Length: 84
Image (cartoon, rainbow, N blue to C red; front, side):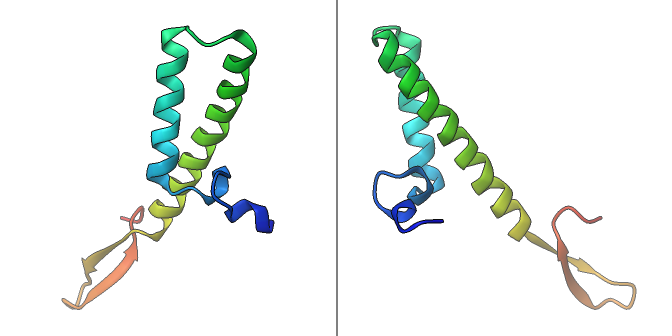
């Protein structure tokens, strides 16, 4: 990751919510069909990058989620969310 990745306006520096909001705006613009072709292609490419960024943020969050389970002796323990 470079220094520029955390500058405002770069996708990698966006929170999940910011990226999702930008992605929703892009979808609305494309659905209206009132954007010139070249601009449509550019914002579609940005939308693809925003989607990937949101998916990565969700995977990171999911990996950090833990659940508390009660062990055989009645003692609580913490395990990753996806373990049963």
